[in-house]
Amino acid sequence: MNINYKSKQLNKGIHSCSAMRRALLASLIVLGFLCVFWPGNVLLAFNYDAVKASITFVCQKTVGLKNNSYEICIKPESDTIPVPDRDTIIIDGSGNGEFLITLTEPGTYNYILYQKKGTEKGITYDDAKYEVHVFVTSDSNGKLNYSVSITYADSDTKPTDGALFKNIDYSEDTQEPSTEQTTEQEAPKPSGEATTEAEPADVSKKGVLTEDKTLFLFMILMVVMSLAGIAIVVRAKIREAVKYSNNEEEGNIKI
Image (cartoon, one colour):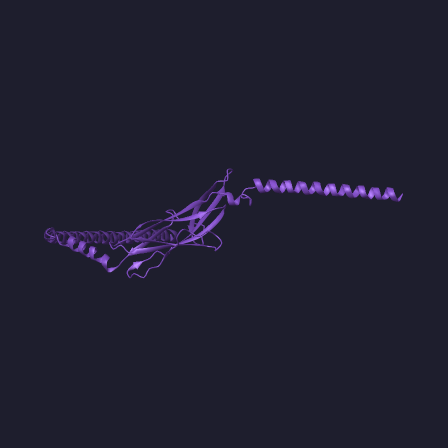
């Protein structure tokens, strides 16, 4: 009895170990499958070919001829994501700029794009800030692809013209061309004499129109007064006729 009982217990232990081995083997197979074929898997993460993401912007200067320098800056929102190839681009006057970021694995990378306020007097610097979102994905061949989305800072609104910085230059150097242009426009005035000679004719015409209006109003007033007088006379006649008819009716009643 004891031998049979021990053999049964031994067989149960063997079967339990076999079941555990099968379960462990199945788990390893599933885990290996996920590691190999799951998108963005850890084992193949270091086998991606790096991709360079491009972030572009436009810097415009309006008014004035002086070419001042403007600094466009970019910074990552987190210290754990790749940094651009440079953090500042200097634009002289107006121009375009491009930041490049080397990315080696799928993910979402966020950056802040802004203009550093200058100290030049007479210039209004654009204080716009943009959030740049870089989305990196991998295809079935393990190739990285990226897309860039730009919105205004702390907003989901996308700018229609992309990242644009407009600066207005009101410095002293910009005022000289405008004054010269004004004097050039004011200088040729030979035709001004003809204009001044024509002004008395316009004034006399306005005077005639004023007299015509006065006469017209006087005539209207006379017509209104005449109609009012006629209405008063007619009303008085009607009252007299009504009173006379009432008296006749009373006389007939007394008879």
